[in-house]
Image (cartoon, rainbow, N blue to C red; front, top):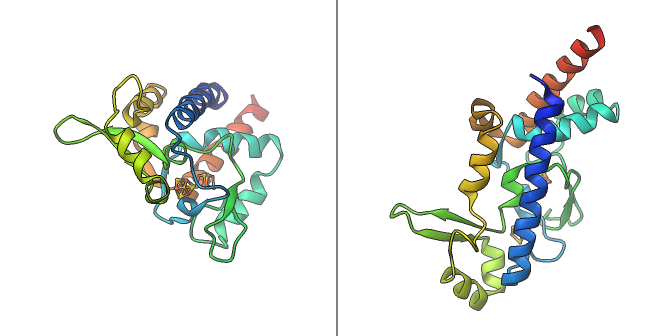
Length: 193
Ligand code: SF4
Ligand code: SF4
C-alpha cells in the first residue's frame, strides 16, 4: 500500500469537507460555540485507521513517531490525545491536529443523515441546538441533498479509497496508534528499498 498516495487522496477529501461544512455553517448560522471542545472529551469517539494516516505521516515527517507511540502507550487522558484542554473541566480547548482531524470531528456540529424512513434529518450538537433553537428549527425544515452536508456522502467518498480500512472503526487513540505502527513499517520498507 502506498500510504502517501492514500493519505493525499484522503486529505483532499478532508479539505473538500472543510469547505462544504464551513459554507453550511455560514449559510445556516449554526456555528460551534467559541473555544468549545466538549465533544473532543468523549472517550467513545471512534475513527478508522485510514482516517489517521494523514496525521501519522505528519508525525513521521516531523520525526515524532516515537514520541507519539510513547504518549499512546501511556495516555494522560482517556479521550483523544490530540485535544489540548484550556479549561479545568476540559470543555474549552483546541485540536492539536486540526488540519488532519478525522471525519467524525468534522461532522460533530451539524450534519445530515437518512433516518429509517429515508428522510434527511439534521443532526445538531446539543450545545449548538441550545444556543440557536430557532435557527436549528428553521434548518431542520430546510434539509435537502443539495443543501445539507450529508454524512453518507463523505463516508462513501472515503470508502472508495479503501473499504476495509475505512470501516474498521475503533477509539480514536487506538486508531492513531495503529496508523503510526503502519506508518513506521512503511518508513522502514522505504528505507530498505
Ligand atoms: S482529532 Fe481534534 S477534533 Fe478530533 S477529537 Fe481529537 S482533538 Fe477533537
Ligand atoms: S460540536 Fe458542539 S461540543 Fe463540539 S465543539 Fe461544536 S459546539 Fe462544542
